[in-house]
Image (tube, rainbow, N blue to C red; front, side):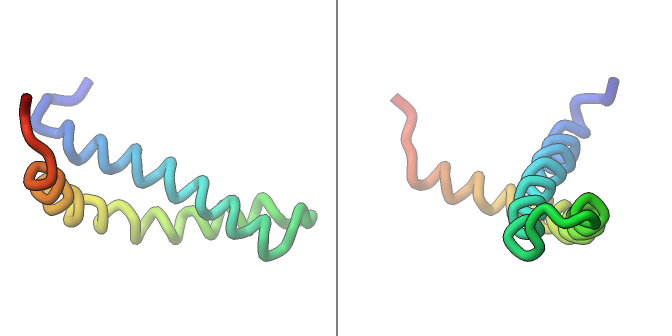
Length: 75
């Protein structure tokens, strides 16, 4: 278990991993179809995307939370 202070980073890590996995899979499929080397292409594309997505999520998430806070209101 991680201490609560790591929750935002852990959330970003998991979310960016899952989203980049999905997007890389769709992109790879559209580019090459179900070729014999599809899993290798998908995995390398995913890891590359995740290396970019995770730090971007860490930077963009707080900004997004502030924007959402301004666009919504409490009851």
